[in-house]
Image (cartoon, rainbow, N blue to C red; front, side, top):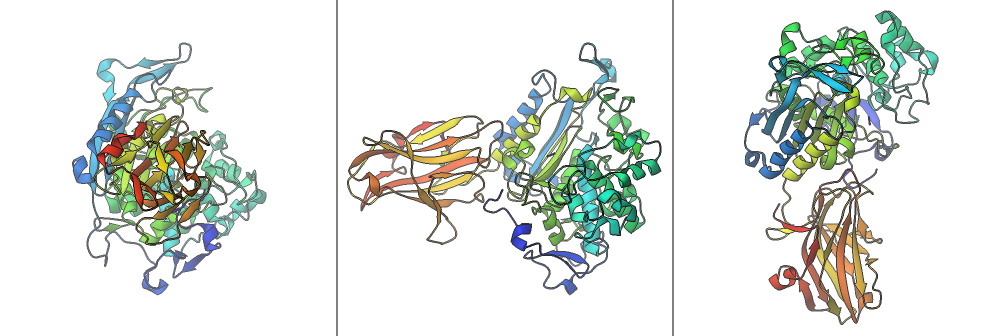
Length: 608
């Protein structure tokens, strides 16, 4: 599965590799700790946030307004999701889905669509799904349980971070120090951190399930050589989390399913989250694939109520990389827990500084593959416009995803059965991206001044221009001032300030500087190319552009926002546009007459 930018969080490079074990917990300076390591107990985090004061937020249903969200984008989120029930483009992306979106402690959207069970088989000859009779099909429900596939990796990662917090597991320790057999075939230097960040050097996947016994599967893993040196490349691999499972089971003396129940699901009250669901759950579980060769590694027929992943199936349904079943509400509770620093109500499963490690990029040496401990970070390909350097999440092969944005305190769960009836019907992550774009748009942006600002929109693969009327600059003291807010897909989506006049009729970039409006700083950040892209911290910036070289000319200024496809960021806002010529103001968009002369192509006036 799956860049340095302002607000990108704490990186390994900035820390100089400063990962230290303090008092049995993990310290990543300058992440703030509770005064001193001795102030942090090294035992279990405990089921109740003892000594934590007020309970952490818990989830309740509420209106978009209560969540601080705009209702329109949430309505469009559902409409777009329903469109993927139809051919998109050749086949439905999923038979059905459960959508959940919220902010703070409020779930503002929880909507099932389509079918949890629709097909009894896949007809390879006609490339069609064989449907169950109508009375045997099962509609999606809010509490439908899904095979999470690789979203399971988040649970394994949380269990690992718990053990790091307690001092029984060290992030920079070699895996072979816990599992001596692991060190075979040149794997002796792989560390726990490299497993959690997919930088171990493992191959992406091997068919462990083909071995006849669990012992043989483990022997195949022990004998597996790396495809690159540890720490040399980022390569997503299920083998990392399978190995981490074995470490956890060795150091705790408990099986992974027991650890999940005792350390996460029981404390948080996740009653519909577990490995190997019992047969009684089957009517409430979304079916997955008609598994037959050659598209599957195993001939199992319709998989419904059992784990879909072949290797997880080989491990009996309990594996570090796949196998957890859950529902949207339970995943939202998990997300709320992490966004609240590891606590939910009076339950605490992690300390805040441990959660911080899951939202901190350890892969700064691999631009584009940002990764915290277990969580992927800043991935527009499924996080869409929710992606920021600290947005964390994960996807699952069956069609599942969880996205957490600490910047806006928002969370999104999209659970679809996209391998039902067959894995080849779905491609890409378009439904996930569309849902994330709409939730990002639902978080309002307050205008820099007044009640509204110019907004670029969020269309992909387009160019939008905001052009001021012709202005005569008589002195050598011309300047443009405005407020600017931007959050775009880095490099792909670019905002450029341009000018044109009688002498230079072509549109040419204009250099400018920006300063965070709330900082009080004066120097600012120069943008000599006249452009910005990427992450600006979701705060307003003051902008200043010197127009002295346009003296005596009739000048036109414009903002040009060009986006690539298929992903975009939250867009661009421009406010308080003002052009001065010495002591004279020649344009001010707060004046109705001036604002009426602005040519907006793709831009609009927005109050949110």
